[in-house]
Image (cartoon, rainbow, N blue to C red):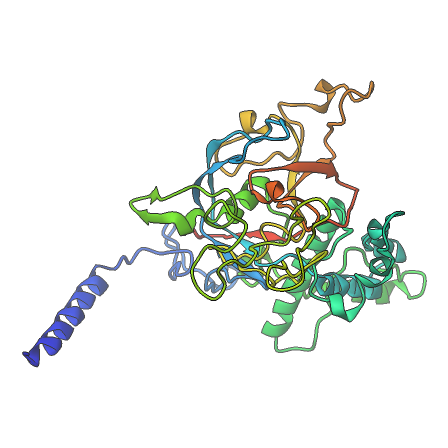
Length: 422
């Protein structure tokens, strides 16, 4: 064997790297905008001039996973046993975004409740409380869950339930402010800064006006401008299209030149709800769901899906995007208003139905009780611990009033991926 061969290969590699470096574009980018404007030639960051802050690119916020965008076939792949015909197949494209790798757990929601209890009005706190009575059933002994599921430490990392769509939106608003306030605190050299709340407690009656103005000024120090690059975009509920795209995770089925080896009924390969891959985990349940009438978990032992009701948010294997429980455990709220014909009149780029545009609620006979469709019905997806396997398919969809809650619906947040196409 020629011992000079590895050295020669190294030389070639270094030469190739040098050529690539020489060919590297010197054009300005969002991360490296340069010292002066390419439009006016005026230097940035001069006194009284246009200020361009340093920016390293958007980082993933706490609990977020990057979801690379692309095209996919949105819609139901299972037989439409409900005969709803409300999610026919169509091709859409989704811009890259971030999504929580897990459902929001009880401990996360308790953190939120604690923050607004200390820093907001009693009205705001009361409005944010989950409805623990969703566990009540006159024919079941679920009484312990009513008082203990949310607050007992043993349920800390179980998904929060009893939360309405409106409460999930409020949580997302608070979370955005809390995360950015924490980033500002970590990045500052000064004293600790107070966090944010949805609504400040009224202190005008207990303090002079001047003190109130000082408090407002102090709180405003935590508010960094969007242009500073030191804040994250808003946490929010994902759109239905984003959620379905992230759940299918078709990135794991690609093999060459944009070809895909198969579609997916569930967030994993195959038509079974058990792990088909050979190895130690072969045969394990891939999700927490109701296996049949009266069968919420199977018999005790290895065939058990590990949960009679909900399970901890990291219990099952993640999909190819690294997201846990995109099928089963709890259904999840998405942003969209429900319409049965959304697949017909929605955009094919980042589709979203935010209201009844082009399909007004006045077209539905709600006054005479022939329809329940209005602009306050929101879509939820994913299937739950109390649902059969049919609802685990990402293409299935259901809806509920945005101010309602159940023991089978939770949520997770999403965030735009600014300045990233892949």
